Amino acid sequence: MNETQFETALNLKCDARYDYFLKKVADWGELWILVNEDQQFLKLFSEEDQIEYVPVWPHADFASDYAKNTDDTLLAKKISLEVFFDRWIPGLQRDELQLSVFPNADDTVWIIDIEDFQEDLEAALSR
Image (tube, rainbow, N blue to C red):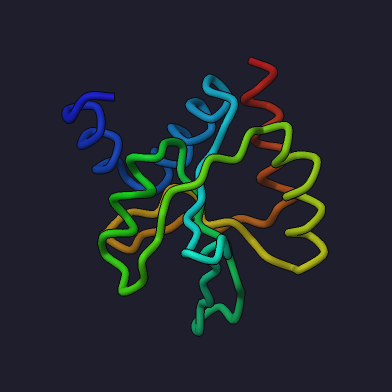
């Protein structure tokens, strides 16, 4: 991914970033999370909405860019779609976590429950 593509995607509005995420994840067969030195994944809490959520990105560069704006030492970690469907979706449902899809530095986020996200991703994969 070149710098122009990176900046263009990063500057999309929240709903357009969601669509971009679905297309790229369907194309590439992977998504990215952030983990700390202990391999614990980043989980955030919204005081306003009283929900916990896990941020996900379509490419390591976006996750790493987001990590620069945190106080923690976080690294991008790839999750294959096979592992995501087999392990992550059941785990996220069990822990009642939602997803924050492709957040960026402007703090606009698309938070979605796992069932709706799974439907949207499966639809993107079928195209």
